[in-house]
Image (cartoon, rainbow, N blue to C red; front, top):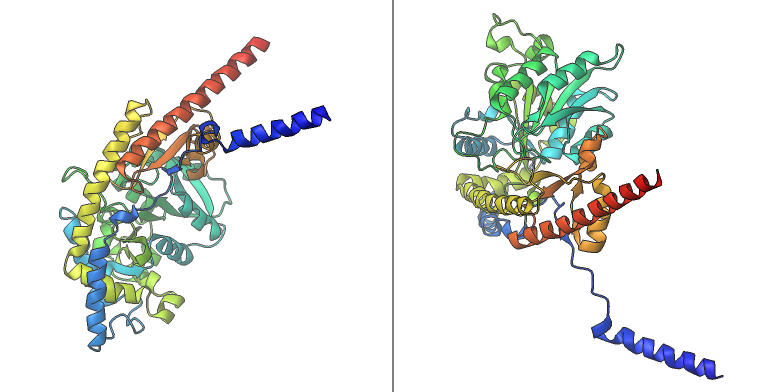
Length: 451
């Protein structure tokens, strides 16, 4: 009986201790997410889009049908494509101006990739992709039944010579490789930018091997390279972009490299795929493909585009058209550039301070790439998220090659969080790295002692 009374009193004391704030375990820190590749909601251009919606409201009340009817052309309306071409040309003053006839309206980059795969490939055929690459693009290609073939990269982007070797070593009887996927400017996930020399080499290689290049240029305009240092859009390196005028040229002249052949007989090999998701607001779901007219003709001839009379008609013609005409879209992009440049610098400085320097200093886009100095970034993620309250994207998620070197890396985003949280996130990441390295070292020492 005495023992039971003692046990009961002990339970009461423990209950009181558990309810005493002074002895409670410290709560887990709120999660800092360095993995999410989204724009900070605080930076979305609400006022600009509200003005555009106000203008659309007035027009609709006055009897306008803009954006309400089926599109008159599967490529998009003349008015929108004209303003889109002017917008891109203003943002790329040292590059070849955009011809509206070389544009096709899409629902964004993912839709553009899906559309290109459906038109130019068959299941089982191959696509070359960068290693590492945008992880969701890899999923798109796999969902189309394509063989995803990784190509090594370095701090300047895709290594064209490596792609050539992969094609040469391909076993006889393999299904053909049809496409190359690259993020040439301010790469996702590494932040690298393909040099002009490599861009030209890539286009020449594609034409020689009868491939099409899917250039995901969603970060091309979101750029703060010193003026004149950013290479031109990849279409500007495709001579056929300036001269091809019919689908028959694509069908009969792919890979034709005779320098004596006139430009109009060269095959176009570049599709530049872009979007307003990163430079305005993801929810708009409006993007575009820029390519030679022969390729645009093939894309726009798909049954579902012709049946629906193009895509994103209301958001393009009733909303975004106003932002393009008034050049308020230019203002929104300028604001994002300035803000993200500062955040990228803060992220880089914080990483360098804790001994985790990134692959490069970002000059645009959303991301940077870091070698963590641990065996497995996925293992580190578990520790970092559970104990230190920070998350990131492990390199293996961006890699279709299974490279051990890439599995020890991480993609970090500077677009989602304000600078103070970015810096705090880096501090937490560094603590997790230090702990895992110490655990690895002690484990290795213990193994050595057993021998």
